[in-house]
Image (cartoon, rainbow, N blue to C red):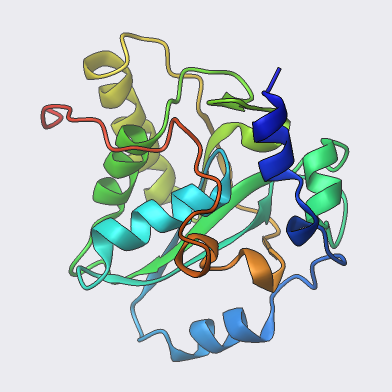
Length: 206
């Protein structure tokens, strides 16, 4: 079970709020301003604060237009953070990346995904436990599915010794997380960071 410090960090009063409104005005603005030809990638790798932050740190100015946190893969409508953290909605905490495929490939995004979290722990990242912290890739078309399965097979064999349990599923309804979750670690540099969110120094996939 998570330590009392992890629990307090993850469930502080600042993380409780009203239900998400789905696509917020800010997310809609990003979607409207994204250049023609941009694509989306959606991944889940534990606490979405750290996942979003790592992608921004490593790909800002290198083809990344935006990274937003939200919920995917569940059954209920208009999920809230509290509901998702209870495990009752079936959603995963996730990050949706808008990118320029001419500068940043989908394969690069997924290779980074397998470097920056532990894809071998079922419903867990670091001290965070629950289905909302599961590892997942949510593809947006047939080509993304093909790439996701190829990269996963290589990462599993070459990096993770056959222990990868990441789910690969079609991306269905996306719910934007509450506004205070967006850019959380930029606004709160001393905020909670999952211990599993760091970039492993793996050799290039072959």
